[in-house]
Amino acid sequence: MAKQRHPAFTCQECGAVYNRWKGKCEACGGWNTIVEETGPAATRPSRAKGRIFPLEGLQGETKEAPRTPSGIAELDRVTGGGFVHGSIILLGGDPGIGKSTLLMQASAALAMRGERVAYISGEEAVAQVRLRAERLGLGQAPVELASETNVEDIIATLSQGRPPALAIIDSIQTMWTETVESAPGTVTQVRGSAQALIRFAKTTGTAVILVGHVTKDGQIAGPRVVEHMVDAVVSFEGDTGHHFRIMRAVKNRFGPTDEIGVFEMSDQGLREVPNPSELFLAGRDMATAGTAVFAGMEGTRPLLVEIQALVAPSSLGTPRRAVVGWDQSRLSMVLAVLEAHGGLKLGMHDVYLNVAGGLRITEPAADLAAAAALVSSLSGNPLPPDTVYFGEMGLSGAIRPVAQEQARLKEAAKLGFSSAVSPQPRLDKAKGSKSERLPLATSAIGHITDLVAGIAARRRKAS
Image 1 (cartoon, rainbow, N blue to C red):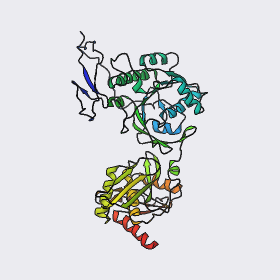
Image 2 (image 1 turned 90 degrees about the vertical axis):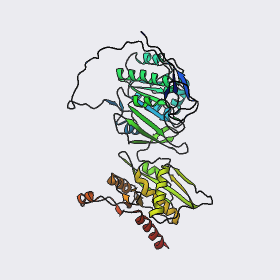
Image 3 (image 1 turned 45 degrees about the vertical axis):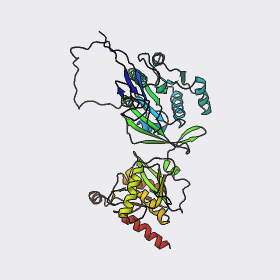
Image 4 (image 1 turned 120 degrees about the horizontal axis):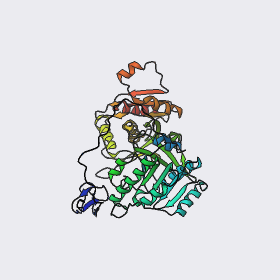
């Protein structure tokens, strides 16, 4: 006997389900986002007894997951070495950031090596996809194109002949399945379409990339359950005012989640940037106060970026605090530590902080570089142009050690820097690394007062 189907009210922003309509979603706070949806009735009766399956131990033979390299080194770095057979990747990014361009380049690279690649577009016609390929100089690549939104038709078509090595669905919000009685783009349809495509990928070994729309705050739109269903979630970030694009893995079951890929938008599409530090530091003004070079880490890749600060007297009752490319709360903490333990008076100044190049930094090791740029801007004294900064700042003003110090220093030395301001090494590490030679001269500081005193002494020496 079929179970009686009850109406469900689902939020189209976060996927929260309610048993009645509400004007405001209690989960995400969105207004007028709850829509009535119905799913398929459960007609299969429950089994009285379950099936017994064998249990295995931790010891046993393990094999590396088979992969198909995309031919784009930066994309392979983020995915962990290529596309795993039968994996599902959810790719999100702002409109116009270059998602379709990157996927077209990856599709053409695979197809030129003899792999079967299918590009299914639910938003553009085949002629529009061809025009993009011609602009990129990839019109001769044997990529199979289609403009379709029905999931059952897509799976039936791709199942004919040799299974594709890669199938791109652009985008998952435009797909719909006949098993769900709901309009395309709703949470129920997105979830049902993703389930069908995941089942197809696991049974055929085809790597599937689902392109997802993003919300105003940069999160992938649709139910969060889709992110848990897929094997990898990759975000394509970047500022439209800059040429750089950053690919970052938010989730990856077959590789690291802290690696990034750097691309540069050009007339011929997206170009790989093998040495992003050199490009992020290009054109910096070394004689201007308020700039510091931060030696950071993104996964296993050391990255040098310029942090710019501007501290100016404010005529407002509440001074402004603006930051681009860094955490707003982290800036507030650094300012509070500089006032409480550094002896600086910043309460009547506007503070602006910017990470040059459009990169967003989330590493706490940038505290020391941001503090150095702020002190330099307030005092009007430029920092040494051949010095890098890194270190985490505590609320007491102490500078804490950070990981992978050697990799940061080696990258700085490779780019021509001669000194670094870093935290004091831990006692156990200092005892065991006496014979280890650092690639450049380091000035170890243990408290924020040492940084302020060093910049002040440099100013007195210059005057």
